[in-house]
Length: 328
Ligand code: C5P
Image (cartoon, rainbow, N blue to C red):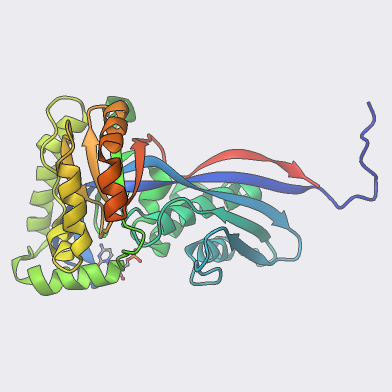
């Protein structure tokens, strides 16, 4: 059958859609300070199925435009998506590349869930495909690390040991990780700035920081063989989760103690912790059904305390293309 579209229609534009998963921290250990002023970390990061979606379409006029369904989100160079797009076209030396992008925001902002970093990773993945660049993974990781400490993890995703300032990745094999359930809480009126949390940590705990590469490497080795990593390989029960920012941030933000108390009261919770620099909190359960039961049992108290809640699953991947095609 003949194509019914008129011949004078605008030229076909490439389009694609990328999922940008949130992360939680199954371990966050602040080892010390680095010579670049960042903190040296030893973390275990886990992608979960709470996801933003980034819709991308090619444009011929070389402009980069972003819109979002989330009032108050910056849409200019203050947004990591725009910075990712500009860094990518600078990297390939093609200033004329343009895109229209629309973000469906589902991951709460300022929550310690790496929403902004995951959006940046999604922009790298989407624009690499949309612009037909086919860059080596290593180039995308380099660009990701320049955009932010969590962006390389968000490109990779799954269950990953993250060292350095967060950009040195050692993934765990995805099929070995047990399919735990996650109950996630975030109070809509609370948010935390990551630089503030690390500054506070340095003020409160700086005297205890380790010094020197040898001391850092001993902690990395300890994490690789820890009971947590054994548990994530399905070989041991889950130990309590360590997040060195938790006590520092909780001392300043009253709602964190309330949320932790609610999660600790859940029947069947294996572990309870704050994610990243907070203030989102989560409990892990043996399976997703147990997380859903806990959420139902807690519904009245969560509503009374004003918490938003989500039941999530572990995901074995980071930012990933879900659709690509052409539109007129
Ligand atoms: O890398 P990113 O832009 O996400 O970091 C935001 C801020 O968080 C940094 O400017 C720094 O103040 C703090 N940070 C840190 N050590 C890290 C990661 C972040 O001190 N490893």
